[in-house]
Image 1 (spheres, rainbow, N blue to C red):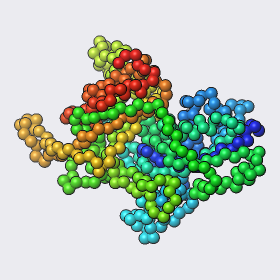
Image 2: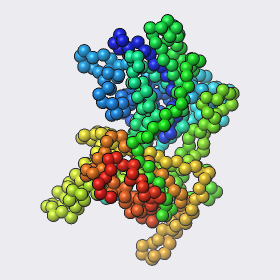
Image 3: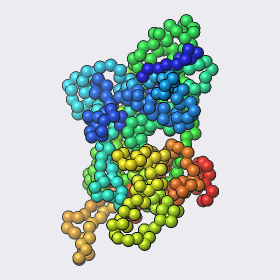
Image 4: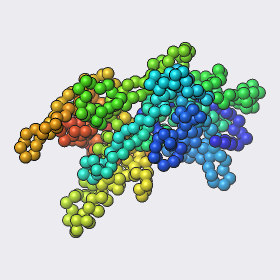
Length: 488
């Protein structure tokens, strides 16, 4: 990305930033989503990378929401007579198990060992980056049940991987633009890659090193001219800066279970399997875990490892249940009811379709409109995944058997087992735009959250068997809402 600025902008701010993904992510090449293996952006080693233009676009969008009057002066504009961007972002490259950024061409032995044995890789972190993780997802119809034709897969990469990039900005002396840009990286308003409103692409900054160059000074000019662009050769005169703790536009709701619950199902490949292999069990995924600080000097020992699995409460699973209940409350507030006197049955079906799902105005505004549909949009609310270590909670075991409808006896060969969790969780919603809680859209979401907090909205699988009921442990969670709703 080229950068340009007026002559009085002779200050160069440069930072080397290391980020760690806290959720699964997918950064493609802008092609249709068919296969992750064919579409993922990669470096010459075939390892995932994050293109600089992708990060610049996400950064511009987040900066524009917070500082709309300054976004064109920093990120440039295509309008005649205006300058280009004063921001330059390099591609972000992945780290190996020693927490070292890979900015060179590797041999296969560096990843798989001298014997090229994929079963016993020499660098499991890099091998995991080459693997495809699939998450099964479903779509609900207007009655709240699973749409028979709405099953699909989301192909992503494991959470926990680290990437390093270089960020450069041109500005005037004593400008406050750089601190504002830096604080944005530490907020939750930026997500990278595809399906960000499904909770993917979340990250945190684990290391920030920077230096300011005044090009009117000879020493700074020479130092700036000698900066090595390779990310694995960070200049020694860069300064480590502390983390910024920032209050985000998010809502955190602590929940405790009124009953056992389970998200996902089937045989999980990530979690350890018991000897008696249950038919249904919670959904689990592997991830990268780092045991030592990034700034540690000893790089001879591996710092990253693959954690076998975490029980995952997918944000998309909670989003589907909330969206269905939001549509109900919005229709209630607007006076739209399913028993409205209408004409032919086809007319009633069309009427129901127009007031449910993504066609519902509240659902479209809050959770977005799918790609390819009229008025497609991202929405202003997303829900983060929640992770629970598989080493922690004990699972409830329940045996079931299918009943013959004619004899009321058990059906032969229809015995199945499920494992359930009974632990508290913390639901976290990200609000990406100003949301007025006193308007119909906000009131509908607030009513849906109130249902969830009082056990009237079940989450996860097996809700027909009484699973997935929760209650809030801190009734003051409403104090996080701005502006304050007028009605409880």
